[in-house]
Image (cartoon, rainbow, N blue to C red; front, side, top):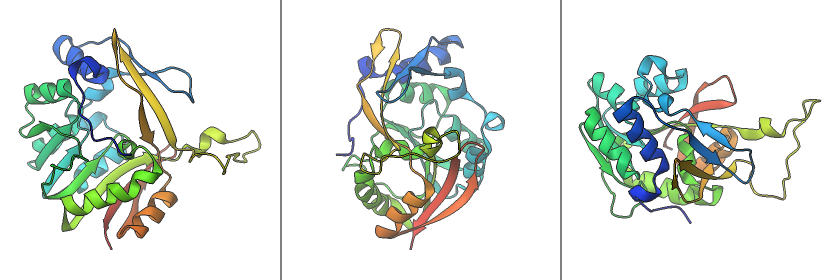
Length: 244
């Protein structure tokens, strides 16, 4: 089932890291755990990057975004602030209460603590922006029909979704270049994560990395067409999705 919850401050490690960096211009280690990978770390400073510091996929999406824009999972507000500076109309949402506070303090004009999949959330937008592996919040492939149903409720008829993601098949590449994936198992892009910042431990959550072909297949089944806008340097890509 797709996640419809909001976070509380006591279960918000990323928000706490963002708040620390905003206040002190430095932060501790934002640790990331998964049952599938070794412990990793998110450099908090990168969550505050300027438009010039953003990868080409993100800059391209910001240029393409138009009309009334929804910035999903806005974090520190870096994308929303860049859009505002370009004179664009953007509404930032995040499930993190601490991130929302930071965005307000940084000058994001319209920001709310909202879960995209909350049944009560029913505004209308020309562009829905889902960046920094924006497909992640969908969680699992089985949630894609519910995701596209929500998009139909939020998008104007001629609107679009701009989403980036990555194809994780490179993680299963052998030395001879072949790919070894258990086709009988779960989809290889379905990952579980948990974050910790100082003594703040978040709950485990599902995160979806999806290859472009699989995204296109599910989109077509649910009334959307998919366009590959640009590919990154490491199996990542930016897609534009719109009504068929």
